[in-house]
Length: 460
Image (cartoon, rainbow, N blue to C red):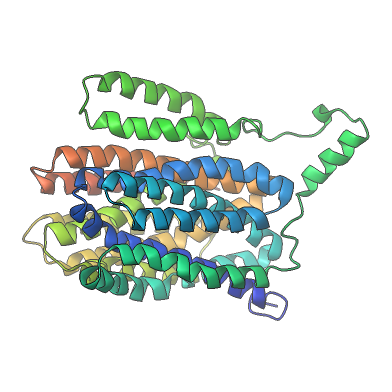
């Protein structure tokens, strides 16, 4: 029986609808953000508007793991959707770029809860043999929003204003929530993990907790604190990198020290040393996710600001990338190439795509080259992203699925936020020479993709 069989059909439709909503939200908001930054005179905060969402989602991800382990993924998933929509409404009503950034920070809290809960829902509902197909279906949910989302949101932005793009997402969320609740009803969404149940029973019997195996992560109650410290450090790092204050060296030093102390307590041991197996899988996700996000954020801005394209046409790169992402995910779900090979091909595709897109910084390069490049990048993400997700769920025991899903997304988000903050600061400093700023953004993305290819060799 497949994911569209009688037993799993409702769950598949519900999760598909949620992925569709997230995909539309990402493509629509990314297309509208350049115009919002221009209207609010907030181009120096453009990178921060993306980085802050990721920084706050780090805190939510760390909090999501113990919540899910104790209460199941159902409540965290619904809470995440509600908080996400609240942030969008705040951003839509923003009178200044600072308020828009605050709305994006609230949105990040919701996105962090959603992301971790969604992974655990898939692990609970679908057997291991169907998970790759479900991740491929989630990638398929990105296709239609990637095709029509940038065009629709670009047209709405051009005709009615960018605020209407932000407002549209909460309205769509109502139907998505109804489908998710209907599809996962009776699917064990409110039960704690077996490990949590065992701890409760042993505690009642008076068995010491030391007899129960513990995860190699920070204790549950400490992880949200370390995550909050990391998120604040990332934002301070981005602010210090702009060197607008005389005390920026102190800010920079403090942020680096906090990250050095906090990040290892949020991830499996050996992650940033690329230890073979799970740690390298989590590290590679951070590298490819950051590389792809840099291109996704700065490519539409390049098209609008430097090439004078309308918003709907500038968003075409997101459409092309979404289609090829689905193609790569479909190929990964077929299992024709071994997982290690798919990871290597994925990193190569992202590297090739970023390098091709970087050529568009040159005024003599035709615009269509960027769409070709982002097609390669999307194909690479489609092959690597779901493969990593499936491998992490397969290698993690059921009691650790929440924590490992949290670590996978937390490391990606934390790395992306830090890099976006730093690159955004450099970009703001180079506004007098924007071509150099775009060259820095794509150059950093290329280096990260190259590093991902090297780490992929250690994921087996």
